[in-house]
Length: 101
Image (tube, rainbow, N blue to C red):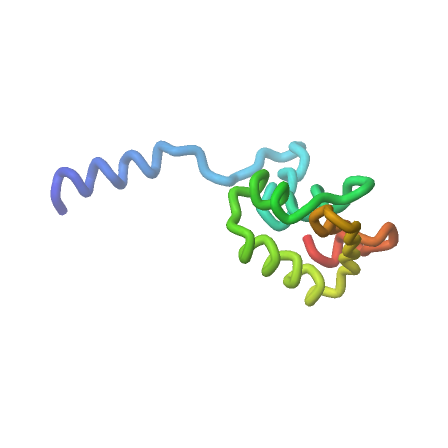
């Protein structure tokens, strides 16, 4: 075993693991892009695809694909289109958010 390999092993062993101490609370759910998308779509009047893309760092086609993915999971994603305005997306008030997370 080379010296650099030994250093790598020693460094990874020194990093704190994912172990939890007894009596500590469960870790909070990961804040994934999908969870962020759900949070943004859950806001009152929803938001448009350009704003979603900017906040999540996605291109327009990725944003639309993620919304389609939520629909495939069975979530009701509503669209609202007003003349001269971009399409707004939002989750139905009765959407089962736990299904997608």
